[in-house]
Image (tube, rainbow, N blue to C red):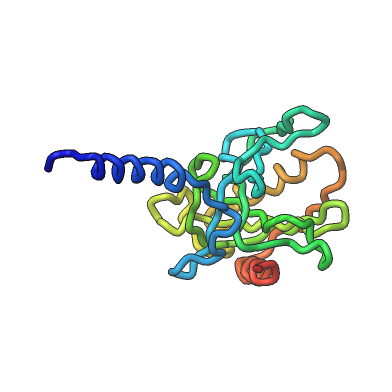
Length: 202
């Protein structure tokens, strides 16, 4: 079909619309908490095996390295043992004892890039109090078995098959923050984890 002015104008408009609307950033904090299959959605901020404290900025819709006194916040200890992020559609309400942020999650799997969105299964929760506020960390494994490094779906299975990894995680959290503000209460099972997710779901 030969090009004419009308055709070229429509093509131009299509290209502009693609550039303007096709590249629009999505607010990852507003994704559904649960997938259509009933699994939990996890947004990864900090890849496993790294030390920079990366956080999602929902105003800028970007991932930024957290800063303290104008300097990048870097963990002065061993790198993160799991992929650290948040559960969208949740908020740990300060008026109810939370820390004012979306519920944290640790996904035990191979390293996932910042911004990765995963469908996961909660297997436990690490109970933490930080400066008097609840700062619980949901512990999960990928829903897809091909993405798993631990062959588990429950806390009992995790305890029975990989007890050393539980000890490692507790040791890391007891040592990575030397401020003395974190109090580690211990780890509870997936039933408690699911209750906490429901508690903070928007």
